[in-house]
Image 1 (cartoon, rainbow, N blue to C red):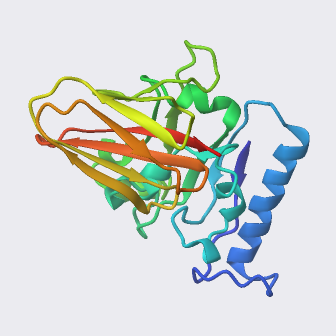
Image 2 (image 1 turned 120 degrees about the horizontal axis):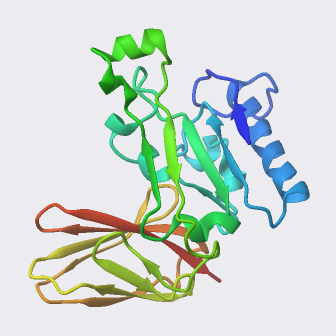
Image 3 (image 1 turned 45 degrees about the vertical axis):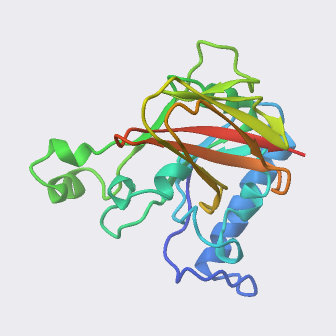
Length: 243
């Protein structure tokens, strides 16, 4: 499903004003979610486009908050891009990240394994300058999503990172165990919620190859685990906490 939400606004959601730009995008987001819930339940749905708003806004001003509240059923695949370095954002002229790819839980199993990928395509690098790309093609960069469909499309009980750690079980209740490949350097493990807030941080010493994470006091939903090696190498995995 391809969409283009209305632009502009001041970043403040004024739900008492139906002409408020953020309110219009909130209504559009909720209507699309309602359509999927009522007409495409159990279907593999990808919703994408220039949705003209930031995924990382605080909840009171976040036009996608109803979708985020159902993180077991929906996933913005580009959330890490939105919460990361601005050099990877889709709208560098502002700069901001306004283009998104949302998938339903039926596709989560295809997004988690080794081989899946979400990234911004920096097509401007093929022109003599960004402005050459801007004037001839678009003022937005496209997003590209690759799903790993060689395996059955379902949520697996074991989610492997792209490089050097695995998490089991996943989805999990309360506790999940991280297993790291043998290493001879320190590892920093960081875990974030869907709003980009850090909920856990731990430095693993040389030779420590497993860790049990207790998430019993956290809310159910999607979390992102990031591992950073001492040499700067990084990798991440998506975790689903059930209650």
